[in-house]
Amino acid sequence: MDRFLKKKKEPTTEVASTSAVSSSENTDSMTSSEEIPSTPQVEKKRKKHYKQKFRSEWIRIYPWLEEKKQQSFCKACSRFIAGGFKHLGRHASSQTHEKKTS
Ligand SMILES: [Zn+2]
Image (tube, rainbow, N blue to C red; front, side, top):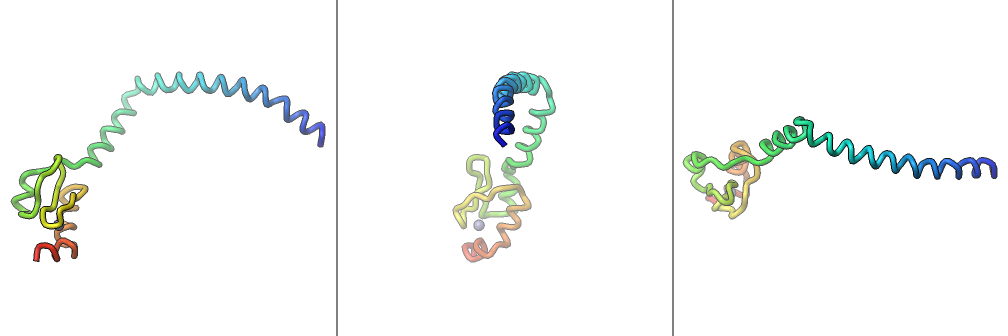
């Protein structure tokens, strides 16, 4: 058991040196990831999906709708509606909204 512990202690110094190597590898991969166009592309795609820009034509469909900070805002409920047109429809048929508009 004692031997085992001693043996285990030795590689600790080795681990320390390898961690230093891996850290330098990390910085290397960081700089290389900047060059790879696939990384920002994924971010762009995600952003596009996440942020739905407000469309003024939605107001014609939903009179309670308002644009605030380029987001959909329900005047009746005085709350933002995250998401796109589908979410507006869902909000329109929601009980909380129907109560406010009726
Ligand atoms: Zn509402």
